[in-house]
Amino acid sequence: MIRRTSPTIKAAFITATAIIFGAIIEVGSCKTKERKLHFQGTVVNSNGAGVPNVSLYVVGGREDYTTESNGNFDITFADSISSFRLRIDPQKGYKFFSKSYDLPRSGVEIVLEKEQ
Image (tube, rainbow, N blue to C red):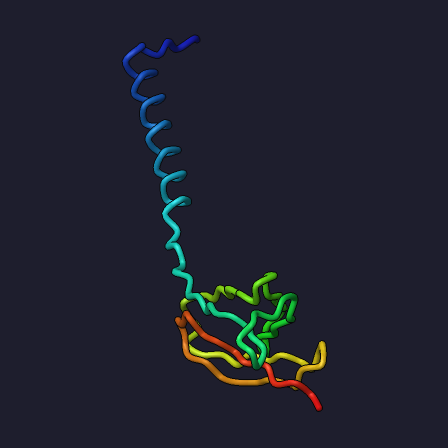
């Protein structure tokens, strides 16, 4: 015995399926976007000139960062972090640098001292 389905039932089934798939896609795309915090500034020498290509390390982090040709840098953090420690290892004739900072922060000037 062959059962025939009415066009109305087919249309209702297709519509319901589309609504369900749409809801699944919408739920997947509604993830909360994490806000980012920035730590921005410039690494300078004792004369106030930007120091290029200085490696910056976030203690406990996995990445290192490098200053631009004018000494500027921008490090981005997840909003779950409120403070961190920045380290600059001795390089290019400058002394070791380490200091803790609160987030967010911009306009930071880090003055590297010359080794003697």
